[in-house]
Image (cartoon, rainbow, N blue to C red):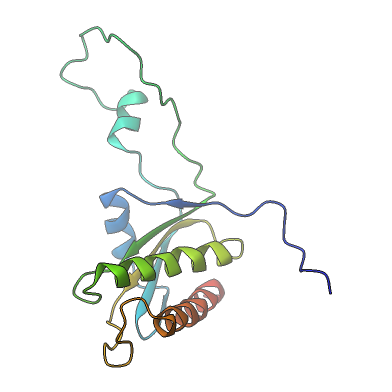
Length: 163
């Protein structure tokens, strides 16, 4: 049997980095919740970084009159708001070991990549809201924990897509 045909162009998921974007998204009610995760969504793109505001002339530096020796190499423009931007919040109080936090973040990114084509564009934040029971998952990066997180995130994004 031949492998399933995948679309030639996979939707691109950008990474959110601005604190203001996280605050804006987390200020909204969650779009979908599960036992351990919550997903928040806001339409639109990320706010411009300080460098982008300076580059576009929206903000001035105190040294604006000084001559610059070299021009910046990165002349990128703010990204199109039609993309999906993902941020993840995995606090230490819910996942004490860095191995566990890294595993959960990888699972969040992978789930978003799988569902990005069906989700509306905008800013998305997935937040770990409760710890996984250490008695049930004694290893920090066990296959059982990976499977549990993947299953829960699949259900979470499926519900978020419908709402």
